[in-house]
Image (cartoon, rainbow, N blue to C red; front, side, top):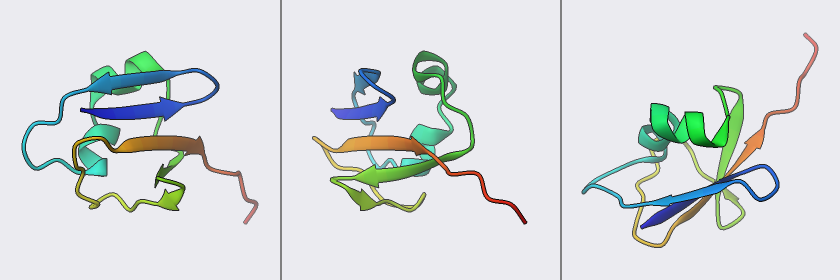
Length: 72
């Protein structure tokens, strides 16, 4: 089981299916719809930045944070 958190009090817990990455979770339409996030998020596991190719393990808690807007 992994937990994905986004915003205050918004989270979902679900099973992981074999080899799964942060990217797989970010691209999951069901998770996006339930938590209400888009493409503009940074991901953290245990407070440490987690790149898209990071493999997930049972018990991981993924925290999604909206990226800060920057001016070019």
